Image (tube, rainbow, N blue to C red):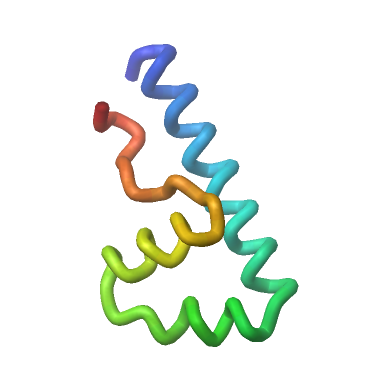
Length: 60
């Protein structure tokens, strides 16, 4: 793992933690989140809320 990959890994974890925090604070967002049928649905919804969780840490 390169330093850049490690930093991307940490950023992804940070984004996911913030997303979970947002979902836990909002029953409406929770309902929307659990209604997702696929990974792509989750990524798209998270993007609407300002989170970039679509790429894996090793992807460009």
